[in-house]
Image (tube, rainbow, N blue to C red):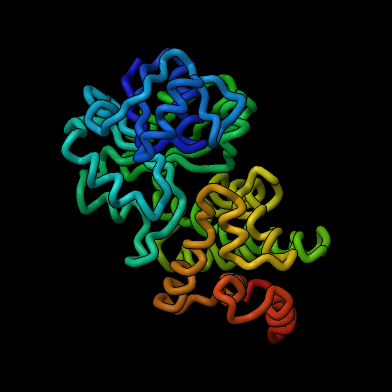
Length: 331
């Protein structure tokens, strides 16, 4: 088995480390928070972010990036999207020239409006870069509940290597070359999940959520096609699949945050109460700017952006969306 260095010891990085270690692989995990690492080593459990899932004996705690990546055949980045650039920069000098690089962050960089692969392309050869994404709550993966995801790379052989690396009887991996579609599906669904939570928090029913998810997917697809993604990707695991799981589960940080906003809590306060990174709060602003730049209509994204910025209330956002001019569904 290969040796894997994991950058980022949150819930998802820990869950994926657990999958690899369970297959007999050697895994070293590092995080910028040394206190958190010491807690993991002392408790042999990620008490803060993935409680109840013991650390496999094949998972070792590393206290420096250099230690985590020493002799690593695979480097897995599990840092939040807004910190991926700094995580990559800190790791570059320690990554082997032939190491496979996997990124699981779902987001768009706010300042540059770049996807994660676009950031990586400035520093590494994309033939060894793979995006791993799909409907996958860490809480379920850590407990070996059946999960299916997709590995995307411009080099299909690299995606197939990740497929072989992770595949188990409880963790299934498909492959695709549509990096753009996979990244955008994973990032933009968090915006719609915020909206689904707001809808729930306001006491709306299944009809409203179904409409929000369906029309949300329509605008995700519009932007994706404009940026070069394949339409079928948005009907797959990293599009519809990830959207469903994020909009309907209480494991979803974005939905939980949205529920509190819908109940009347200020967006900043709701984000703090979740206690972990709520990627949708960052992605909403980036997607709003990206849609303006590309001249793509994204009314749900715009309404959620204005609501979390305090320009309008959640109730006013609903009125804006429901009061839009009539149109053809496929228009």
